[in-house]
Length: 257
Image 1 (spheres, rainbow, N blue to C red):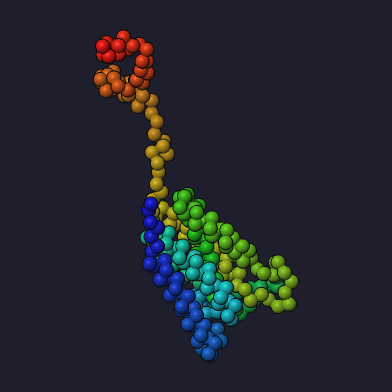
Image 2 (cartoon, rainbow, N blue to C red):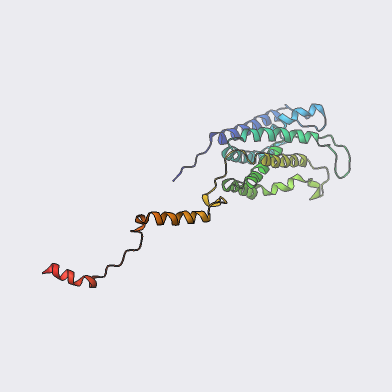
């Protein structure tokens, strides 16, 4: 029975990411990173640094905990099942998602008013990983990767609703603090990466009967020619006649005399 090997990177990298998130939150609680420092501020040049730093920052303990578990699970799946290019997916997904959030105009879709927003949190990265893992299995149509897709859909399928403004589903007294722009950006970037990397990494195994020329009538002709030219190879291939003791009765009697 083949043993299942767990990649060290699939364990180490998620732990490092979680550790960084909690360490940075510790400094936040003690007064560091205040006044939108390290956050993505759309269309504001100073907010570009948030493309790199914002996933480490969180608004409160609930926000941090809500992002920690999915980050750990999804990073494990990424580095375990896509070891060849997991680093590229993670880094590109992180940067492109942040840039897309920065480029989106901060306008309230209900009032049309300009909103000065500071976006923090790792939810954009969560969406990148979830959508990449799901669509990569679908695009590659690999049974092992499709299993990962089903797991992601089973446990994180509800993430799809996060790409829409919370105001669409409930009446709020004030604008939602959940950045649907980050979720939408992560979903778009994750899906795009799954498409562009669909031919990279582990190749799909094809059994011989999956090839279009598996059966050919010429194979039958060659088989018949071989039987005609080499009949000696098939002399013992016919079923052996059943031994009827009554037909050898006289022979047995002579042996006993």
